[in-house]
Length: 156
Image (cartoon, rainbow, N blue to C red; front, side, top):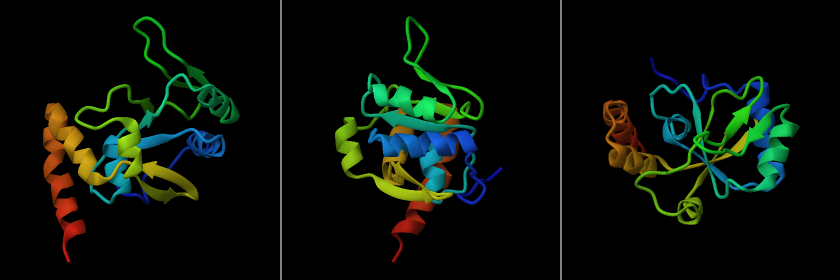
């Protein structure tokens, strides 16, 4: 099943969360297959991977509240994440495999607008690097579509 930016609709809570994060100045990147969809790859994803500059930033909690949800900062084996109606697709990325430090990757980010919301996105080239470094079967299966999309984007 292919997806596209047009069919990658945000829930009202996701829209409110992204707007609140942006308004509060929280630096984050959409990564993984969510970034690939926003970059035009004909792929499917069930979540929106978000990589934060700092997970201990209190503004993340405040943004979650603004969106009608809550932020679990993580404890023990419980990873950090969002809770609340309409926020279940948000996947907080703890380790960006194969990538540089957040600030380095953030410097080469792209900005895409989705339903009126500005999102900072990891470029497709870097999504591919990350997927190659993981080499999970689901990542390997997506690589041909990602590489073909990149080739089209680079074509004169």
